[in-house]
Length: 215
Length: 215
DNA sequence: GTCTATAATACGATAGAC
DNA sequence: GTCTATCGTATTATAGAC
Image 1: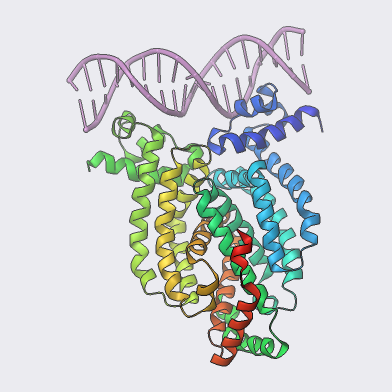
Image 2 (image 1 turned 30 degrees about the vertical axis):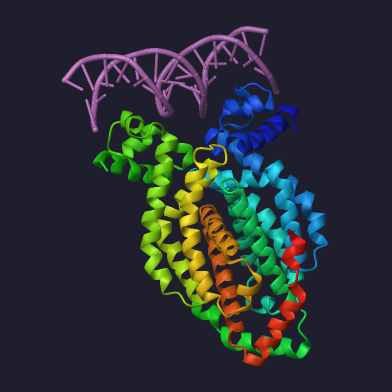
C-alpha cells in the first residue's frame, strides 16, 4: 500500500474522531493526512469509499490489539474488566468513537453500511469466542444465542461510548452497574452442584420452547 | 409557541431521520418544515440551537407516549416486550434514530451535548422507575445501582438501534438474545424460597464490598 | 414575522500541468 | 502520483424590503 493511501486512511480515522461524521470532508481528511485534497478521489474515488476503507482498516488494527487480552478472559467479571480497560484506552484513542460516527453516518449513506457492519462484526466475532468460553457450563449456553448476545453487547457498548460524550458521569455509573451485574452472574457459578442443578431445572421449566414461540 | 417554530421543530426531527446529522442543515430543515430558510436563524439563532430544542421537544413527546405502557410493566420479560414494541414502532417513526444522530453530533458539537443528555435522561428516568418496581424483591436491587443500569440499558438500546441500520438481521438476533436473557433472569424468581435464599446468600458472599474496592 | 438577496465560505469532483 | 486551478453547488448567516 502506498504511503499516501496509508496517510489518508489514518487521517480519515483521526478526522472522524476530531470532527465527527458531520465535519468530515475530503478537505478536512486531507488536512489531517497532510496531503492534497484531490488525492482522496484519485486513490479512493469518493469520501464515502475512503471512510469505508478506513473503517475496515481501523477495526482490524484495533481488534488485533485486544485479541491476545481477550483470549485470556475466562470469566464474566474478567470480560467486564477488559471492557473497562478498552473503554478507558479507546476513550483517548477514540476508535470506538469512530464506529459510533460511522454507524450514525451509515443510517443515511448506504455505501457506509456494509463497511460499518464489517467493522462491527470483527468485534462481535471476537467477543463471541470469549462468550462461548466464559459461558460454557452455565445455563446461558443452553438458553441464550451467544452470537446474538455478542452483537447486543458490542452494539450496546458503542452506544454507551457515544453516551459518554454527553454525560461522562452517567456513563461511568452505567459501566459500574454492568460490572455489578457481571459479578452477580459470576456468583451463580459459585453455587454448589445441587443448587446449580435446581436452578438449571427451574430455568428449563420456565423458558422451555420460548425460542420456538418467539420467532 | 408560534406555528413556524413548531414546524421547524418537527421539520428538524424529520430531517435528522431522513438525512442524518451529516445531512442536516438550515436549508434541509426548512425544506422539510415548508418554511423559509432564514427563519431558522430568526427563531433559534443557529442550526445547533434548533436541534437542541427539537431534541427536548421530541423526547418529551415520545416518552409521554410510552409512559402509560411502561407503568404497567411488572416483570423483566414484560419490560423486554415493551422494548421490542418500542423498537418496532420507533423503527418507522425514527425517534430513537434521532437520539443516535444527536449523540454522534454532540461528540464534536458541545452545544448539542446538554440537550442530548437531557433527551436521554427522560428515557432513563422513566426506565429507572420501571426497573425499581420490576427488580424489587430480587437480589439485583441489593447489588446493582438501578440508575446506572437504566442508563446502560437506554444507551445500549440506542446503540442497538443504530446497529439495526447496518445489519437488520443481526440486530434482530441481538434483541432475541436479550429476550432470552430476560427470560432467564425472570425464571430465577420462580425458585422456591429456600433455593432463593441460598442464591442470595451466595451472591452476598461473592460480591460483598465489591463496590468499595472498585471505585 | 416573513420574505428576497446576498456575502463569504466550504463542499465534491474533475481537468490538466508536471 | 501529485499538484494547481477551477466549476457548480451547498453551506451559515445577515441586511433590508415588505
